[in-house]
Length: 65
Image (tube, rainbow, N blue to C red; front, side):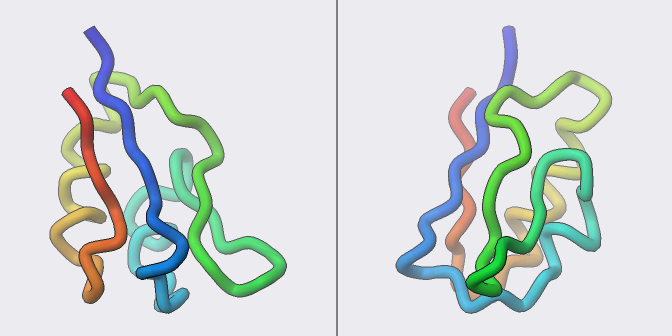
């Protein structure tokens, strides 16, 4: 069972915390906002995605389990 991550780009301010914490799932796009590199998160990445979600100052990251 995989976790899925989503980024609400309307809420994102492009601080880059998510990409700094988990650069295998998140990146900063040409508009300066976070986007997913991939939607399905591996078990190895789960904690990093949770940490990125917690670190997001605008709560723009959602996790589906």
